[in-house]
Length: 350
Image (cartoon, rainbow, N blue to C red):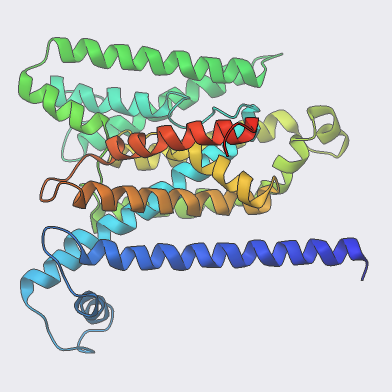
């Protein structure tokens, strides 16, 4: 075995160990998330509730209020935080190299703003493309997908650069934000309050039913994005080099944007706007792992899950029993963290 190959395998082993350690940390944080809050629950009781639901009769029954708190409130909320953080971070990890812009993310590309406008239509006007029980979710999804569709449509034009794509996303973000603001001006005070709470993001809709809608989309889209990691590495060397190796650059770029946008829309339509996760997590992953997208993508996803679970713990416990909107906490955490990452890259942070 050559020294180069030996070093490569050793590096891959270290990265794999890091990923496993990160998964273990997220699981530990899950038990902390499930057991802390306005009602403290013992870790062993939470474990018994989960065991009884998975394998009925394995453990002695617990009071109904503990079972309902763990199984119907805290566990689905924790799993929602993991799935949403994982998804937004992976979407950002894909969009940044595809668009060759370190500021690319579902938030900066206007996908979240589109979802916010779709939800505002229902909350303020009581009307949208869809009506019924899931009218807010469906309208948020449609307008989030519409934002992505406009970017993708422009990307199909000849001589369209990644810079034009992200500038288009920023313009779309401003447009939908302005439309939402106009709606708020003419809305009743109670409707404005609902819109504001939706726009700042929340995990309150973290239920088993909603997880059942999000998970299939994530389960289909995320493996595809990971499978394309090698193509991303090659595209990173330049379009001409990638084409010489047989990669259809434009088709790959558009397909990755479509899938990333779809999976983003599938989660933000339930949670509202959650900023900075898709922007910061990929940068943290690259600082730790390097630029090998085979490891960057899963590391970014797990980092995003970690950050959102931590943010939710803060949101639930910092001013208990009041639960802060999760988007507020991610912004407070994300801004200084992102500034630090910028200074670190410039060599200005100690």
